[in-house]
Length: 369
Image (tube, rainbow, N blue to C red; front, side, top):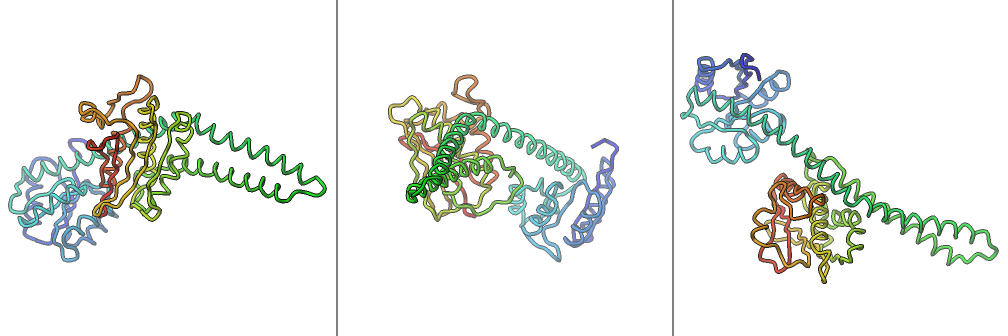
């Protein structure tokens, strides 16, 4: 924002005396501010729809909206707009909670002066700008990680599709010739046709997994999704990689257990963990990976455990750092786990290494509320 460009401020505050004080502070303080105000949230939202504002200052207790619903509605309606909350002393804890939910700052009434107000507005606008840059960077990193994962499994996916296509082609030719014969063996023909159907279904599962992984979902809402379906969509994408290394995959995932999530992101996390596990144990004598899921009361966990003997503390302390990798040059860029944890933060969950497990075990945790 240019130095001489006025900062357009919308003040949503029902205390007329405090609103006049805020307008006076902005008029007399350093910088150039243009301020509009209203006493009601709905009127404020309408002003935001039809006018240009750089920031909104929002009271938590308005005639038509009180408490968390006030800032949640404003943020949901205008996610790109920087927000500063105006709280009373008894609402300070709510201000902190609001910042955790994405509000840029909060000010306690009675503790505001002109310099603090101007500084808070400028910092909030800059903080929102930085947030947008980080969002763009994260999206680019996610795309990069997706491309890397697709590149890693491209050969395996091609093999997984080409092999059943060959089967379909041969059986179709065989069925065609069988149908020409007098006294057709219908049982044998039905078996061939069923094999064709089953093989085509296998290809469909692979393409479904690719669609799930490639889906753009950064801004999508979380949808209640069965964990089993996410696992079933993801496994075909690395099936050839696992089979070619002689790795056995076990599942302990209840059919009726679901999570509120963006399925493509969870699939990306799961795929990353599976490929990492495959790289780590491919030269072991015992090679297995187990995918589990369980309801732990206040949260739901998805676990990926492999036959490795765990990770040293020195490496475990850095394993989620961006660009940290223990793989040979050219085999990994060190972003997979970092991005995966970031995706879980976006789900208000967590991704961590279970250091108490006898084997190498990663836990994907989703809060229920």
